[in-house]
Image (cartoon, rainbow, N blue to C red; front, side, top):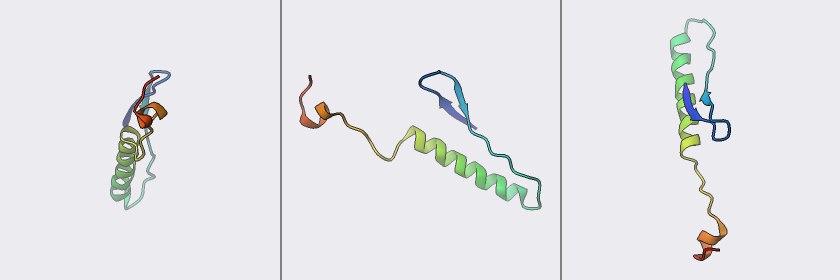
Length: 61
């Protein structure tokens, strides 16, 4: 699954998970897909936001 570009190397980031063959393979694959999608969303929209000291004080240096 495509997860964007590495900011330093500018290389493509792909996430993958191998699901072994079993009777519940389709269900397990869907769960893995959901996990990977959540991981991609967290990378693109982090839960925390960093603020610089200058933006907190309202002054720029």
